[in-house]
Amino acid sequence: MKKKIIILLFFIISMNSVSAETKRIISGNENAKITIIAYESLTCSHCANFHKEVYPRLKKEYIDTGLAKIEFRHFPLDIAALNASKIAQCNKDESLKILESLYSNQQAWVKGSTIDDINNNLKKFLKKEGFEVDFEKCINNKIIEDFVLNDRIEGAKKFKINATPTIIINDKKFEKSLNYKNLKKSLEKLI
Image (tube, rainbow, N blue to C red; front, top):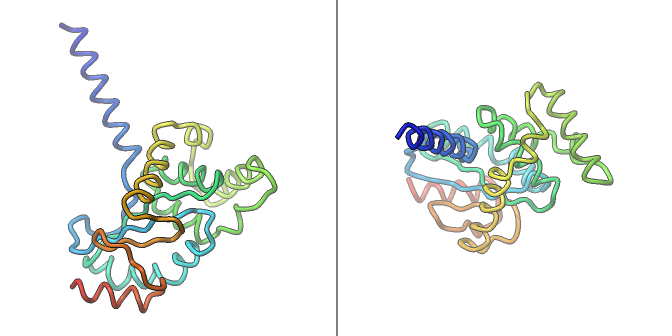
């Protein structure tokens, strides 16, 4: 009987750690009327531009006011983006800060002729920015890797995503040119 209880407790603890590692990176009110999903790749320059040009205004006018929430989903276009996604996903307490920092400073870490070069630049960048990350543990975490890759698979299957960034608003693919003016028009119709 004791053995069964110990096994059950181990299973429950394992499940809790899995769900903590695979929690969505979200900004905004969990119960907001509008849910925006952003499928992105951390090495995509258009995604970095979205975070510099569109997201700050979106955050100020819709997310911070409680009208909308945004879920950042992984759609890595290459191994460097996959590794960066695993790092952001792994550090759950600072995942949004890491994500924003990686996009804001994309040129500081996305450089090198091999994946080892890029990983070394990513490690140096994270340390310079003050993020405490167990790099090897995060990169080699298969649960997180599966979570990241499943985001990509789901996006391709459910929303026919083939490029980044792709925005989904309340389960409908945003088909217009991705700029703040077009996004605002679509959001205003939902308020």
